[in-house]
Figure 1 (cartoon, helix red, strand yellow):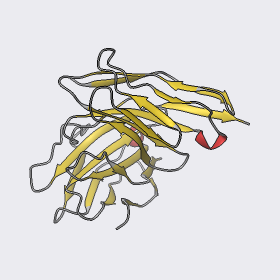
Figure 2: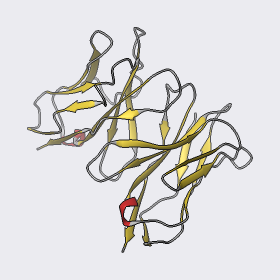
Figure 3: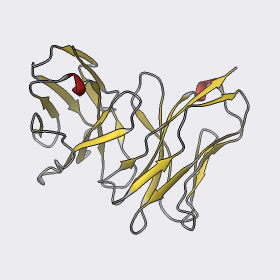
Amino acid sequence: GDSVTQMEGPVTLSEEAFLTINCTYTATGYPSLFWYVQYPGEGLQLLLKATKADDKGSNKGFEATYRKETTSFHLEKGSVQVSDSAVYFCALSHNNNDMRFGAGTRLTVKP
Amino acid sequence: GAGVSQSPSNKVTEKGKDVELRCDPISGHTALYWYRQSLGQGLEFLIYFQGNSAPDKSGLPSDRFSAERTGGSVSTLTIQRTQQEDSAVYLCASSSRTGQGYTFGSGTRLTVV
């Protein structure tokens, strides 16, 4: 069945460092791909998405490109801030009714 | 409402008791999902409701777990005879059919003592 694998955390970075969180997927067909973010004490929020190959999702300085050839959707940010400290989840979905989530990657950004 | 609302936000219960967790989805969202997030773990799918269709219960871990959705809106997740391993954050999400992703509630943190 469909699945998502994302890099294990935790990830600890200094402020203004470059961030990459790797995500790869296994799926039939052409799913939509998502990144969700969970700030401490809150529910998950949709961060960005891409619905077809070569699409780039972006939001709040974060970017991820749907790479069909490598079945990847890596999350990147050029300069992280302390406020980016959260757990990040990669996910995929066909038809929006069977979202599969990765295990989550905890990011801590230190000043 | 403006977002997905879950109640209670925290619940502490004794082992063996029954608990009910409530989810009020975004108005007009036809799909509703329950997930469980255990400490240090990812999201575990529990159950999915879509409109008036029969729910997808494939993720429920045991017959102690059940859920219903009344009038296509509010949903209640019931856990009977709670066990310590049921301790987790229970997340509810809703979505429309337009593929915009899910909107999650803040969750209910359940602690079984």
